[in-house]
Image (tube, rainbow, N blue to C red):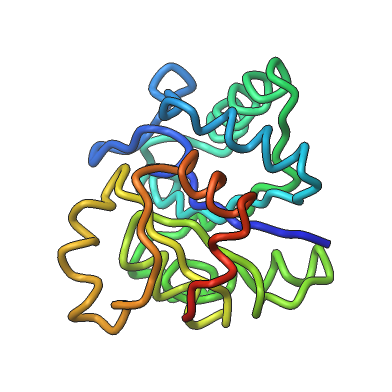
Length: 187
């Protein structure tokens, strides 16, 4: 199975420091949904691993999160794409859970659900927490400049991620992946 894991906010959709709290606030980054559809056409299983601490903070509830994901699914369906699984952490930073990135719990859940070895799986994210999570789960971190990516780019080398491939956006990652260019990147 060909599996890829994506962060949501800042990779698939525009992020907000005030959180994405409603379907109306969820707006895809240009080309991201088409990139997911291209992955689907190439036989990839696409999973999302996302921290959603807005739930524990009381900014939105599980019903609203489901409505946001329905919007994403509907928009993907219209262009022939799909996400095969959304894995989220509803906890806040102080909740001491095992699923909040940078801990590897979400990625381990994805590996279990899809019976996958993460050692060859790319995890595309925009934050240092995403890169750390990938490393802890033995996945292959990939950084995009969208969302918090530009900030993360400034600190990645000092945090031991100098060799992580960096792309402008998810569409560019998918271009490289489908052209087999990502296979040449080392951890």
